[in-house]
Length: 286
Ligand code: DGL
Image (tube, rainbow, N blue to C red; front, side, top):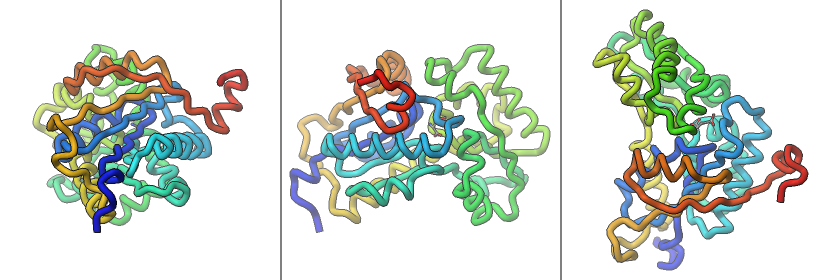
């Protein structure tokens, strides 16, 4: 049963520690063009991948609550790290449906012929119980080479997707995987699809890259249907309403990456979303 049209026309919140969730936003826009979107990049506090668990849960909940206050009808936690660390905690506290993201271990297990797959993700994701359970459930007969992607989120946050220094770092991560026989590489962080071309320039056709953003958009589609929340196709005059972009820092890089990589020219709103942990860090902030 559908909810009232005004509820169905409400936006979907998409959140990441920074710019990586734009790779998910791109897939959501392609699959669900009638939906209004509000994107929040918590770039002021990125990267999350080296933060403690409580910090990540605190930020995810604060941003989720902020998006609910902005009228969001559903929330996509477009961050593997925040999902791994806090999705159950946040789901129990928000009144809207949540969709999280997780590294594509299942598709990798289906795709790999050599039965060796690399996983690039943040240290927090790799050490989480959720990730361990995912590997046990779907990859019992797969050799999984887990590699923390130190420095990669920072590079994308600065819009660096192809510098020689970055390529050098990436080579250090993927060449040992190739040497160990891996034919599949899971991009286990939503920032990494923006490094697709850089990784491809190193591995050529020797590896299949697994990016789950399209699968996340499909899962969101199912969740909207289950809750009667899908926007009417005619709800907006233009075929694809412009997303609203918000950043907890000055937004310059968010605007640049949205334009360069997604072809979306948009203003970025600078927003302040204080939380318990950031008040401790910055007692003088608003
Ligand atoms: N895009 C986030 C993820 O998927 C990056 C986390 C971070 O800020 O370290 O994990």
